[in-house]
Image (cartoon, rainbow, N blue to C red):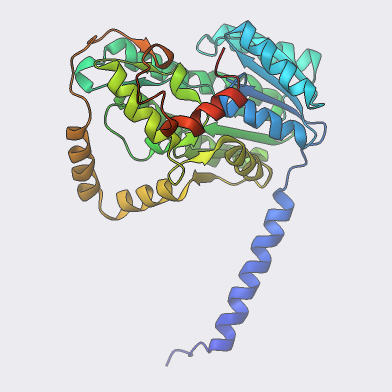
Length: 338
């Protein structure tokens, strides 16, 4: 007859598990002081918020982006906060440029200890307005760029250990309508990142895949909109500014950096995003049906068709109203307005 496990034994087993988990977390903790941290897309938005948080914890921050003027403004912001930083102009979709970036950082600052793949782009519009180029551009930024960056830093990171953070999206777990190129590329990044996480543990490199929900970063003004672009910009911006559904970029940055320090494999940001992931796991058919109904409420194809307009060129009375005040404030704080 099998031996019956008592309640006391169950409690002792649970306590032992908690002690072991706590010990493992302490062992994994990564001190950021004087570490070299590279952030792609670090000149504005979440990237700039992450640079501030890493710098606050003592890291030497290197940020890269394509826009030299944005980088200069970001440098001024970081230096005003007494954060050690270096800026680099780089297009992460070009493998040669990424290799030169990693080499320059290694020679000027030292080998990269922390890599955060944050650079991103967004096209918003119904599927009828999407082009093959939209899909290729999304994959170039969200899949090939992070892959190039990881391959560039891994040779020096192996043997020393390190941290890699890949910023995917809730769109990399639950695909939303009117964002199909973005969603597909973020799913690809999630698979790449989680596969890397499993492979690189043996080298004491911990890879964290981050799935942010809606964040107040001010990014809609720099996103690309198609079709009825003003209506697309309106729903997208209103969603990004909703206080109960979104998270402030600074708070998101703190949680991401904490996950990096502790070597967490996965992080889903915002309760709404966690609920969406749970709904997809438990009832995917029902969730997709619900998203299909939401799609019917979104603007139909028309307007400028497959042409593209930036959010800042798609303003309307709705997007200039107090309803978007939180996102406007984030844009001013996070170098999104110039």
